[in-house]
Length: 378
Image 1 (cartoon, helix red, strand yellow):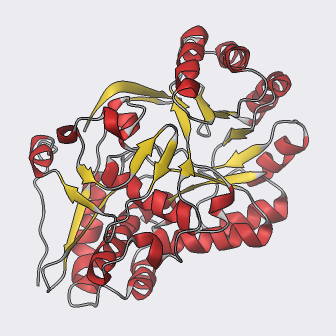
Image 2 (image 1 turned 45 degrees about the vertical axis):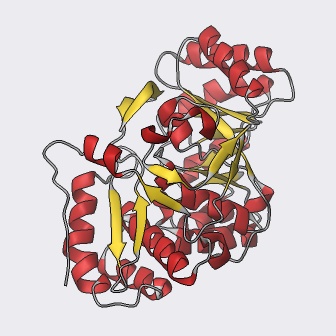
Image 3 (image 1 turned 180 degrees about the vertical axis):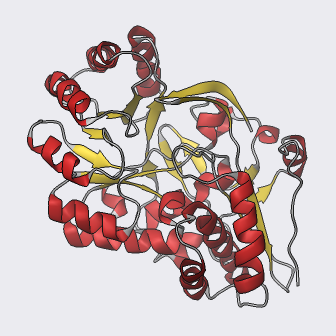
């Protein structure tokens, strides 16, 4: 899936998404669909090929084929027994099953997750790393389009550039704007301490994952020596990570991605633990079409703890560099229908499942060269 504009992250520039689409067909002919979002060896350690193999060789023949698709809790438990990690592949199966079950029952997925708690989700926007003045100019456009948080990606240039970017964006947006910074674990402790101390005067809402995911102790020590709140992303994947974060006081909040934690069932558990420890949650996704981002919106409007916070699950907006769903031509996205984006808010679909159809014509045009679709059947 090509991007309208490249997205620059600390260790990679993304020009297209290497994503995976899963369809699960029940014996009544109904089909549940899900999309992985962008795959990355550096973030998730999974790829199109690895997820295809895990689902096709393990989950499908040993769990899915012949099972009642409504038994999602059972299936999720069996996947965890048969495969360590591989949460992005597990999330694909989980989300496709939720879509299928919603269609069978004739209900939107948010009803399967507890019902609708709020009408829509306030959204933040992720700004690529770049020259400070240019990033600030784009931040003004983002604000004017209705978005209420602004994430800056850092680490591509110098630390001086990172600080200058924050300074220029703060100057452009004013003192009340919710600005966050994400280093994707690319700094070491000394770099993080010196740089965040320089950033403290700019009143960031939080600094996301300044250190690599495994350094909970160092994150705790860092947190004691700075004023800017720290949120964990790569370091907050499993429920045990949340317990360590709470007990070690290693972060002020966490980032929730459905693909990172392994699906909607496990995301609900994740949110329950965050509620228990009083950990704020900022929801996000891995960048994908309307197929990929739909589950996050359904989760965000249904969960009472998640409803207290906001999301940056921009989905197709990031692909097409668009502010609203109406700005994306119908033939350009994989999802026909489904959730809607308008004026910096996401609205879940109200049809059965995730309430969308698949754009088969576009799918055929963007098939990954050398990786043919795979079918596993009884």
